[in-house]
Structures are given as C-alpha cells and as structure tokens.
Image (cartoon, rainbow over all chains, first blue to last red; front, top):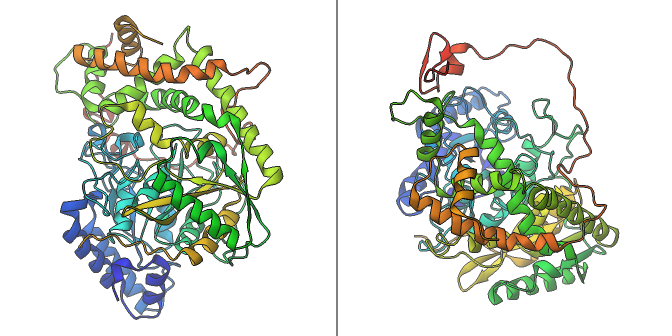
Length: 486
Length: 94
C-alpha cells in the first residue's frame, strides 16, 4: 500500500489500529516531499523536525493508551496564510519573510487539538492574490499533472501537495475561488464554507468580508472530516456564526434521489473550454443518473460578478494591507531615511510584489474621493443583486452546479502579463464569495490529461447537502486523483 | 476608462507606495483595462438597491468586559525590524 496516496481517514484508521505509527506516516510523506519537491515546490517551509518530534510524542501517548485526538498522528499541510505559533508564516511575501507568529490561528489550534501533525506551510500567491501561485515571492508551484502548467491559485501549494502525495490533506483559504480553482486544476476536492462557519482569527486578512478557510482533500469523506474539525463558533472572530456545527461525516449517505439541481447558465456556457464543458455535461448526466433532476437556470446579475469582485476585494485589501508599514513586523527598507513617510513608501515598494501593488492601487482608486460611488458603492449594490439571484434560485433548487474553472490548468507565464485575463480565471467561483454561500469543487475527470472540476453550490450552511451530492457523484465517477508524476 | 499618470501618482501617494516610472506606466495601462472592464456595472439599474458590505445578518457582537492575559511585550516586539526598550522604533516624527 502506498501511504502517500491514502486519504486522511484511512491513515487515521491505520494509526488507531496500530498497523502503522504516526512516525511512519510522517516519514513516508517527508520522503515523498524530498522526492518531488524539486519539481513541484508545494511548500514554502517544510517543518520536518517539528513534525518528527510531534509524531513521536503522539505515538508515545497512543502506546500509553491516551486519547490523542480523532486524527492523532495524521499529517497535514497548512497554507502559509495561517498563523502558526513559533513557525514562519510568510503569506508568500517578502514583506513577511522571517515573520514568526506569537499565536496560532484558531483553525490551526483546532487541527492540532485533533492530533494532526503539520508537515509544512504550503506555497501561495502573495497575500492570496492570484489564480496561479506564480505571484509567490518564493517561486511558483507547478501542477503535478503537468509540470509546465500552474496548479491554480491562490492555494496552489496546498492543492499540489495533496495531488502529488506530499500531504493527505491540507487547509486552504478562498476569497474569490482560491480553494476551489486550484482543487479543480489539480484534481482534488476543495470546499469554501459559508462565510462565518470557520474562524478567520489568525488568517492573514485579504478581503475580510469574503475570506474563508476550508479543506482541500483527496476525497469527499476527508473533506467532511476536516471541515468538522475546523467549523464552529470562535469568540475571537466577531463574524463567526454562533451555532454548533453538525457532524458532517455521518451525513454522507449518498441519498440524493429526488433532489433538484440548477445548472447556472451564466457560468456554464460562454467562455468555457470545450473539454471542460464536455466533462461538465457528462457529470450532469451522472447526476441525473442518481435521480437528481437537472434544469438550466439563469442568474442574470452574475454577468457583473467579476467586475464587482475586482472592485470590492481590492478595496478591502488596500485597507487591510495598510498595516504592513515596516514598524511592528515584517520587512523594512534598508534605505537610511529620517523621513517616516519615505520609510513607509520605500518599505511597501520593496516588500510587496507586482500583483499586490496592483490590487492596492486598484482598491485605493475605487475608494478615493470622486470614484467611491461609481465603483465601490455600485459594486456593493451589484453584490446585493447577486445575493438576491441566489435567494430566488433556492426557492426552486436544492443545489446549483457549474464548472469550477473555465479552463484546465494553463501554462506558467501564459497570463502573467495580462491581469485582466488572469482575473477571468475566477469567473465561475466569484459569485459564491460575494453571496457568502458554501461551494465545493469535485474532480470529475480529465480533459486532454488535465483535471476538470465540478462546482456544487448551496444555500448558506448547506455544507452537509453539497458534500452529500459530491459524495454520491464521487461514487459513480470513479476518478482516481493520482497524477503521472513519477 | 483611461486613467492618467497623474491619477496613478495620486493613488500611489494615498496608498503609500513608491513607484518607479516603469511601474507608473504599467499600472496606468493595466488599471485602465480593469476599470474599462468594470464599467459594465455602471449600466446596471441599482435604484433603490441597498449595498451589501457583509452577508451575515450581524449587527454588533459584544463580549463581557473581562480582563484576559495578553502577549508579553518581548513577544509582541520580537518580529519588529527595529525595537528597543519594549517599544517599536521609527524615524523621528516630531
């Protein structure tokens, strides 16, 4: 059995039944990381020594008969946007090179409490801004299915790590598709939870009204398990929903017969690659085969979703990233200056990469005097129309479906000189974030050897339902998430 | 929507970003492209539509005013590029 291509639930079972130790599991993944990291570069920092120590400690606790958590000893990758106490957290930026947080993000605390063992911090587009992981200060990640191609982004490191067998599962974050699009391009499962279901405490902020942390896994079962670990109220995040999270794993029974799915016309026709569309249509057929009635639905305001997003998200980012000024943490310019304004300007000029500067500029412009109403305020009203379009759809449908990404993985460098074309990669995933609803991407086969993702969206807090639809589909699609990497 | 070099310089000043001449020209062109694409939203009739800043029906979230331990000063300043005597240091401002 190849441990590195086993799921997290399976590994948890093996450790629990004493068939393997946590140290063995961790060593298997570290060996795999050594073997493929020079090609793939999924991680910014691998925490090999810490992982070995922690695994050994967990093994001792288990042999002593202690309860070391539901996922005791199971390895995990964590996107480098989440604070990890005592271990570098860079956000893919020169600005935070060498930054060592003084506290853990709430989600990190929760996965630690469950006994998981962090293998390292996964690569990402700088400050989670991008759709290809090419904007990382530490160099790009490559797609395990084709090393000439991008893994998607911004959680491209997490997606590639799971796809390449460098971690059984990973945490990512999703502001406009940053979990789902890389999951689609790397052939794994990725879920963006309902806004407020998962704590943002210790998540480095990009666009605070859109950001959510979520699971990236090899199977829907693992997705439900990881969501179960991180979901639930956190007093440290004032936007956290104060309700108990259900047990997602027991809800997976594949009973979807009689459900109604709406095929979102605006996200599944124009501009979608033929190969993607073919897999999408085949998956809709499979869904019908499971007894789900599928019917096209038009949500007209979605046409404006991308434009609204690329005003709202940069506006929030320009405000959030004001904190990086070279005073309290992070990079400061070497320039000797007596002028604090010059120190700020030069620190930010050298600390941020091109895409981050572009979004700060765009957001500052959208918020500036004279343009606020035409851009930012109007975008927020469009956001209301998108929320209403979804609301109407839930009257007639249990879930909505679309392709996750308009294309399969594109080549490195292909879109780097044209930001607008890069932004169009997010067209299918963005409306979900604007409305704060949950959505999942399920691998639904290959188009010319590259993975295609099938997006399932549902009303607020319907994670159990969308995962169940994906679970039923997973059973009939029979996709094996293993790239030809060796 | 074409924006000028002067617009770029004004926004860079607001955002506290020093830009090279090359960057100014690149951003002028790229921001114009993105804003041109975003212009479609001005065609939408939003008369009487309330803006959404947040998707949760939250108003104010309070907690009890109970003192809790906070991080020690050494830890808080440990990531600062320039700190001394438990304080962050910056160029003279007064």
